[in-house]
Amino acid sequence: MAITRGLGRVVSVLVSIAFVVLTNGYTPKRQLNTYLNPDCTDECGGGLAYVKARGDEDTLHFVFTTVGTPTALVIRTNTLTDREHDKLSFNWDKLRSNDTAGAIFAKNPLTKVLYSYGIIFTRLFQYNDTSDDADLSHYSTSGPELTVYDFLADDTEWENLMDTSSDELIVLKIHQTDPTKSTVIVNGSLTIQFHLFDHGDRSDDLPHLEYNEDITHFDFILHDIDTGNMSNARYGVETIFFSMDTDKGDMAIEDVKSIDDEYSPGVFSINNLVSRPAEKANGGFLQWKPICYMKATRSRAAGTAVKKYGPQTLTVAEKMSTNFINNSIAYAFYKADKIGDVKMTYSNFSFGLSKDGFFTKNNYTAWTGSLGYGVPPADKISTLVIGVISAGLGLPIVLMVFGGVFVCVKKRFRKSTSPSFSENRIN
Image 1 (cartoon, rainbow, N blue to C red):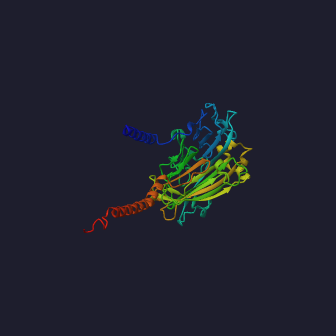
Image 2: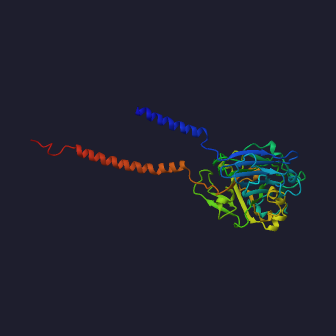
């Protein structure tokens, strides 16, 4: 009977383990609903994707678009009991006009905006790194060694995301840039894609960034670009990170060191651009590791460096006069009278490391980062590694202890069983 009960417990444990494995070991913490070109009945340009991530305590509204400057906007609101009418609304007449202010809004008066933040991708830089020092700051936009691709320019065409995106993967692709340039980006050679999640885990692809239900991962991918006469071509991208904060101090980039490279071999640091350095739990962040990959099949051998420049805080005058901002959905949401109060900082990122063969070696570069709310995830030694280390350090100690006990017991046993002198005397 006892054996039967024991067997039953074993079976129950095995069934539980199997259930966890088969269900990927997680329970969704947000309900994701994706809407492509919501409220648009006519020409939608490159398109707009809206993902409502509804949770028990709050709702995150992700908006991704190439209407205007390519932007990812995240709005955190309270969660309403009315599931059907707690969505954002989009005024496409305004989005298509020269004044987009107020084009994105919450129609339900019970919706309260708790926080908002996002990132704007403004320009791509292609430079001929003849000195092979992989430093974008050495080249001027007015010099012959650097070509600038303006993502807002009328001659930069984006593919309709309706044709490229799915419920949990939003893909923004350039169709073609200025055809009069010596080098032209065509046929989706530049892609910005965003991954949405309803649970927490790690990405399957290097650099294996951690994610949770409050985070979206992005991949900035360049491939099959005709670099023209730039045989030593490298690339960089300009971004603007923004949040609704006005008095929480300047944004800052933190370089967090790690002693463990389990998830990204050879990488011992992670960078966080945080909107509220003194109050991270209630702010937004941009996170990345200083590595990108020069092959679609990512590996340590295919890795090269990501170098950051900045951040530099924008003044009120710059925010009010910059076309990249005034033609973005950030302006459409915050409106003209509020955009000056929005905290903004711009940073450049370049891809490459001296003697890595330049972009032209494989004609491919992929950089991965995270856009999220709350405290940025930090690499920590996994349970598996802790177990291996514990076993490696503990097993010799255990063997020594048991070996010592065994020797002592054996000696004592021999002593207790040895015949005494009185027992062996000759009568």
